[in-house]
Length: 218
Image (tube, rainbow, N blue to C red; front, side):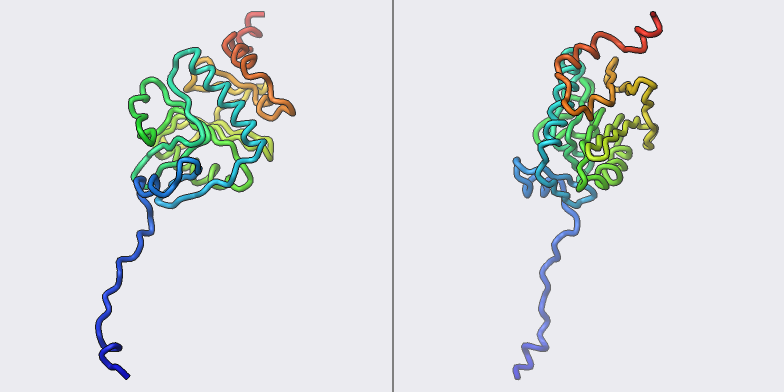
């Protein structure tokens, strides 16, 4: 037996890092992949269902169309990262960045919190969207968060109240009013309609005025 082999000191290689940085995240994840970096851990998204993509398209066109017509800022979707720290860079389904914050959107990511984040929940992402990402968005100053669960047909709308979420009310007509998109309101039933409404019609309806105002004046 070769005693020297057993007695010699064997230096160990450096262990791989337990947490990943934003630059490492960008180097690993391809442009055609959707993933979230949360607390240094990568969460890969499953391929989207047709229902998810249909809902995404509807909400994207309505919110983006409204924002563009009023010149409020920019709406990004699906593959845009929001760098909140060196170890936190989620990729929301949709986010609105106001004109005041647009200077922080450059290159690979929006640097800092968006004004509004929208997530379309799937069964596999429910905990991530409603627990981990919800807490992350509140902590780093996202002003408003919408989470739409197609499978349970429920939508959550929250406003950031000093790092804690408070509900945005839904009135008796089933309408939610955004605080970060001036004048924007949304009938929640539109989100779960068997056949999603025409986006241009919805944008025109929203821009025409708040239904509550017309009821008060009649």
